[in-house]
Image 1 (cartoon, rainbow, N blue to C red):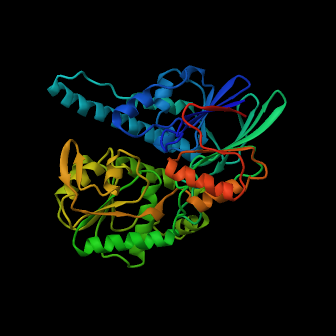
Image 2: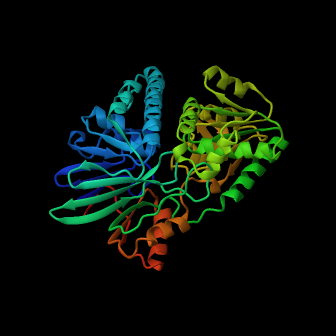
Image 3: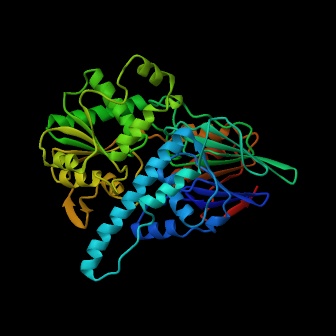
Length: 463
């Protein structure tokens, strides 16, 4: 039995880990690596294995850094089952088709400029049509439902509390009468967050493979983040500016809408319009409503009493490009939530371009930002920002509200690992940069968690 680290190793994006048992090859996640565009394209296009040799995939959740390279895997010869929760399967199909559409648009835009420069054309990583080939391979399983993805492997998915349908993966492996219980955390959520249930923690695990994104710090109470978000909005509206919020279309957008619904319901904000400007977010919000099995008790109670948890009077969901462009021409105060969360693609890039040089406006960063992205440059408060090849003075306020993260903070990560310290023979930290993973390693050692590792890309271990 072997575990190979092929993605999200000493970095956050591109989650992909390979388990080999009884001659079968089982892939945990197949995420898209996100970073510098040329490097990202090459890393995503070239797999470190033959895609046709993979027997099955188990998907922790639908975020693109965990699911986004599935079309390329299928394109290169994979034809096995992709196991996921029902909500994850529905979201993954939606997000991959959207991703393929974006890949095509980006390639067309680049080819337009390349033609002027006499440069050769480029191909998209995959097309929307190629992304659609993933759908027939998605196999829906319920939380805690046992299934056998490969001989000698009994798997179960447990609620990870990160986004709708997110799961941790429990694998009971047996090879030559030797048994090992491996637990892959996926992305670990937080307690007491809106909409979703709290994450299930592992127990009696031999090998723990877990994320470490925020291993360097605990998060503030979600209510404190709610208050800070409200204060940022109020001071922006007080100077009659726009609040632009880059947001992941799945998970973060719905949480922001939930919070804004609370603010307006409590009379905490003036009556200004709120726009969710992302076709993907619009469709994802519809899928959210179809999966009450993923909601916590409070969310289900709100639905039963008719409270508009994902909708309210001042909220408008924008679908057409024409409506999106009109928002940039308007001067009145408003709140715009738009994808993508790292401000690298999508309509939010245009909203930022139009808002960035006006000191009345605010760009609110509400999630972790990958290095080399526009979102990271904004969060680092660079004075000059390049967007679409043009330079802009950053005169707008840049506000970061970290407590809204859907990832567990250091305290929760420590609790997650220490719960198995009596049984775990190895703990592998993935999905984290050094600044998150190394402090977490020290904290775990302080709590007497033994054999904690921070594996490099392409390394492998015997289980």
